[in-house]
Length: 293
Length: 122
Image: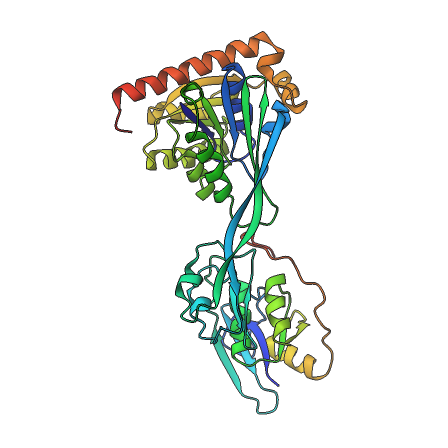
């Protein structure tokens, strides 16, 4: 059971929800796909961390073989190549590793070289396996790191581990890296704030999960007494509300101290346990009624 | 010598464009023959790397000097490889900047920014 937790913007509570769900599930996996600023590990403080570098393939030029035809320069949609004074220049940071220039070069003047763009870390925090993706600053795309993080989960695991719930803490927004993060998820949990801005961002991710034909539910975070615009949106669109988190300064304080709320207070443990139960029920219901997904 | 300037319109009186990589046009001006060419900047609509592509365009059109209000790191590297000198414009028309350059009143652009890369700028 893979549950992705996402939102249209940062700061809505993706990490709060995914960390606490993973913690309350006890035996589980938490995967931090927010590779530009992973922070779930700050809460879990995993031990026995193993680290693996992630690299991509970028072009390397042999200027002796290059005849300056510029096919590669014209081809590159990211403008990662320039041909200046009879020399081809590659801008490593601009390159998106599509490999097109290497395939295209009639002189075979381009070959592949590895470039490290980040790393994945895997450790344990009690019964929670904590995986973290880290993209180096300035890199174009975290997709290769997310691919690695999620591929690791699906292969070479025991049946027991495969049955454990996995919580995917997604990057904010609805861009490529989010799509990569939810691609193989069984269920998407959308975290939303009760503001106009919050609803706008909720509608963005809602559109995305619809596009991917994923079953989804919403966690309403920072709920106040007054009218909740995100709730209104859910009722209008007939989206299941899987949990409500009140606007709670104490909960905010716990998170600011990098503590996991379900370990601190029974009140929060009950809240997230109920949320997990609802989500699990939704996933099972989905599996029973829509097995083709 | 040929001078390249990013311009908002195809006119000598045009204002200098605040963006190098995404300017709509480049003016290529030859101070000796007074010849002026306006190039469409094919890099303007790029999803990324506009500065690199724009710099390539300038190099291919044999400019030796670039007058611009600012310039990103990648573009500056391309221009440097081609030995193109970059001078900082004053906030006036293209023509006034050419005159100022000819009078030796423009100074070399020393502040090269790291690029805006999808975050607007200005």
